[in-house]
Image 1 (cartoon, helix red, strand yellow):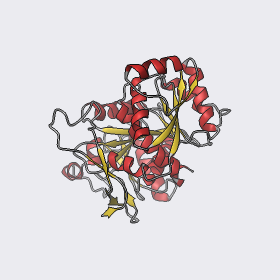
Image 2 (tube, rainbow, N blue to C red):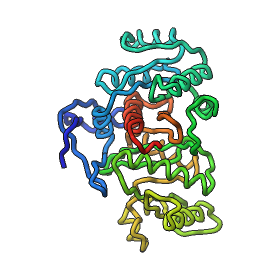
Image 3 (cartoon, rainbow, N blue to C red):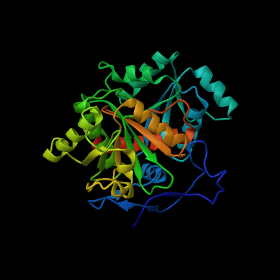
Image 4 (cartoon, rainbow, N blue to C red):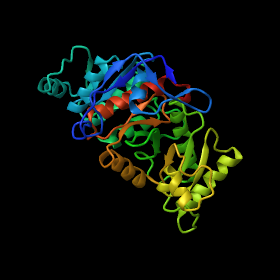
Length: 347
């Protein structure tokens, strides 16, 4: 199905040069976009490129960058601005921002800058800009995640909306023809059952913003069998029951699943699983932060996946990246943030 819009195409590349360190290559734009369709007929985005292309069709947003004194962050800002993705406010040590910009030959003229020295000040200033509506999206620059979390989670800062705050990362994995959502790989260390329910509901909002009207949630565990000695499997069974009774709406939940059973129908059949959702997961719920974070970074560095992460449960999208992420990963996140800012699914 071909729909109006923009798409990104790339020239053929060799195996050695087709990906940068996070698995992306230079791209150009043309006036068409290919979608898969969700269960209710809405276009369903199936690649990171399609997320960027969709974002380019939406109203232009302003992104505030916390502690922007970082070469990769500034490269992302420059490229995203050049292709018309967003406008930016750079918050941080302006002397360092200018010095880095000179080194990488980046023109700062299109960007507003606000001087904020130190991570704590930079984070608080950026949160204030977004909470006031001056910017619609917050992008993490070069600062520790815990410092940014503290500013975002401050109930007096104005970004909290009363919901559980969790992180969902969208993964475009080579060899797979759809996007996977992984949660939570960045924020909640050891979620209990009720918190897992809230994490799933947040991830479902992201899936629906990507056009997936009926996502399948795979609850990841050590085993596909419920075992009282493995608490994650017990939680998985409880989440499935919540979903069955309507206490966890908007999706279909399956589990407990070992990873292979969540994403491979063949593996599930080989194990003799009589589960109609096995192998069909769109959203992967990690049992805890350690498992989710290791899985996420394994996909990034071993599988060369492309990713975009967003914090849910806030009044505006907060884009959380590793300080080691490439500028393209930050651009991916900005595109996802634009989709979420435009989506009614945030509420």
